[in-house]
Image (cartoon, rainbow, N blue to C red; front, top):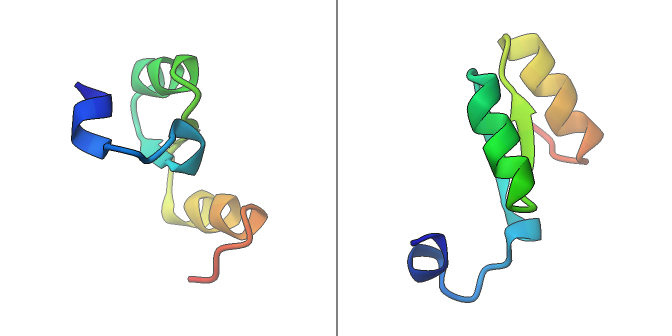
Length: 54
């Protein structure tokens, strides 16, 4: 289903944030860059580490 939805986008082009560890673990198994969302401050730090400007 993921391939059908995303077409030619590869999993290494996806960032995934979620507040449920199980969802993070599953995304990582598929090669998706996944981060556990705990609060906005941590989210901003994660994004800055990825060179994204908010």
